[in-house]
Image 1 (cartoon, one colour):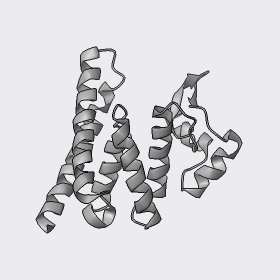
Image 2 (cartoon, helix red, strand yellow; image 1 turned 90 degrees about the vertical axis):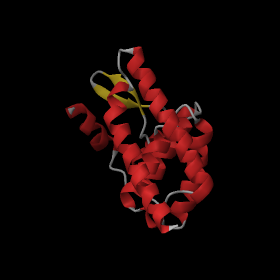
Image 3 (cartoon, helix red, strand yellow; image 1 turned 60 degrees about the vertical axis):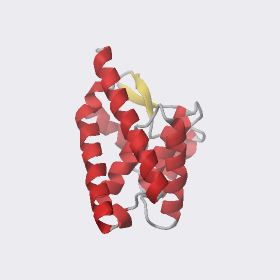
Image 4 (cartoon, one colour; image 1 turned 90 degrees about the horizontal axis):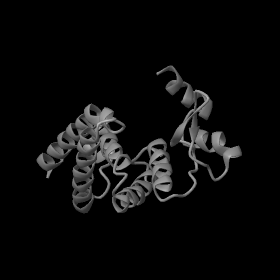
Amino acid sequence: MAHDVAALAVELTDMATADHQSAVRANSDDPAEQLAWRRLTAQHGDRLSEIMDEYGWPTKELVGEEAARAAWLIAQHADRQLEIQRRALKLMQQAVSAGSASPRELAFLHDRTLVNEGRKQIYGTQIAGVKDGAPVPWPCEEPERMDELRAEVGIEPFDEYVAKFALA
């Protein structure tokens, strides 16, 4: 079992590395590059589903902090596999309740899943586009409480968060 878990940790971090290297393709003008990104994220989503079948949510206690973050990233990017995103969200909620996963990462996955379902997000983590040079979030359930809700899960205020993008 210990060997399996060590191998799982390596596999998850390798998947996150491939994700980071390929992420530039997500919004490429070249349809072939977009397809390569979709293929990669779908393969990763499928594998995460198998991992969740076998281990539940890959917590930091199970696979270490880096691999746990990798699992979250894979779930975050499984945009065309909503059933996998929903399942990851549910398992991650249980892990956060048990103190075994990051409330901040859970908030990002929660918003991402809501937006993918065509619903309003809670924390304003998902950006719809840019207007007059400033990032604009997808609609939020309670925009007036967004920064308060963000603070509860350890996310910086929206204006500070989007300032990072503005510099890019």
